[in-house]
Image 1 (cartoon, rainbow, N blue to C red):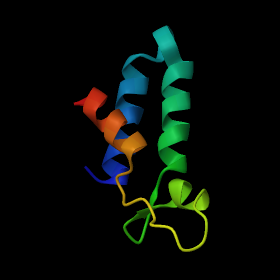
Image 2 (image 1 turned 90 degrees about the vertical axis):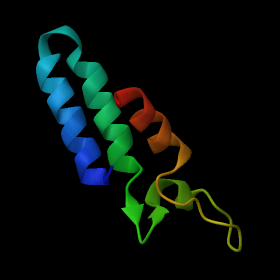
Image 3 (image 1 turned 120 degrees about the horizontal axis):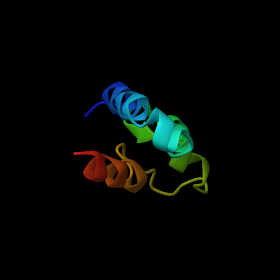
Amino acid sequence: MTHEELLAKIDEGGARAFQADSYGWIALRAVVELHKPDGGICNHCEEGFIMGSIPVVYPCPTIQAIEKELK
């Protein structure tokens, strides 16, 4: 799924669970917003790489794990 689709799915889940656990959905959305694609590379994971190393392709392991749990 695209980054926008993932955010929409999180927003939908957060709206349904608003009274029960809104902070969990807010935190999850914040993590997904950090790990956004930039030219096919994870923008957040790329920041941690030393010059010359291989960048992390989007979806990075963090986004893959979130997508797996939301399916």
